[in-house]
Image 1: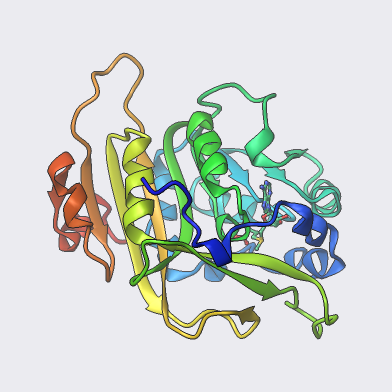
Image 2: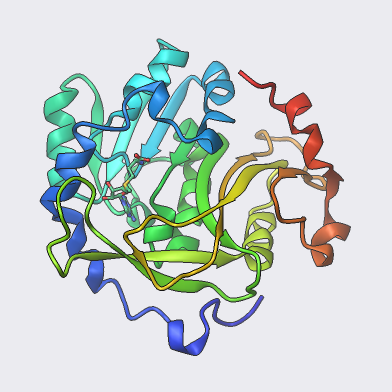
Length: 275
Ligand SMILES: C[S@@+](CC[C@H](N)C(=O)[O-])C[C@H]1O[C@@H](n2cnc3c(N)ncnc32)[C@H](O)[C@@H]1O
């Protein structure tokens, strides 16, 4: 693995940009959106109903105002739900909108109060590309998952390095001229190596090319919007070569093919039936 995943001019400057977390625009948007099955992106819809049928509990990290409760319960009415978000404004809103559910305010990378294998599914949607500490975050998400980690990232075809761009915080109203989040586009080979390093039983993926939102600054190429589901080895089971099935416009890196049982992406529908 390269010493730094960022080229010298793209190296992170620290986490001071977390000031975006309390921005009122986030509360305005997430108290109104992302709470119905129709709000799912196709990449999320590819896995969520299938995961929900198997899950007894879900830990929704980066839960915003907790709208995903409705989506998970639509597919599995009894699923236990816990939400975590770094933003106190969003967690207050989530608690107000869903007074009977459990919410914690925390940076996922620093959570120590939750036990290993806390929930059958750990979800991390639409925020790992905002987190410069995504490697630490994914390690923590994996610790908390009992069976599945369900997450999305942005991938670049061309780079072995990550590209660090920025996103203007403007969802509902006009941009205030200064508030921005990071926006990371990850190199696929190093990211695939990171996934393998977690020693999962299975790596499933689905994604497609698309243009980043108009609010993203610093990239002028299509990127791959990719969702991954990693399955953990059961307690007491022997580790073995992971099975990989990724239906992506990017091939599994040849340099990593020797370490996996590779199934063509076209077989994903046999492993994860369409809704
Ligand atoms: C773009 S929103 C996505 C919300 C929701 N998951 C969805 O898919 O609609 C990103 C959310 O992740 C939260 N977030 C970002 N980094 C986080 C971290 N390290 N720990 C916890 N929450 C984080 C933000 O506060 C924000 O609520």
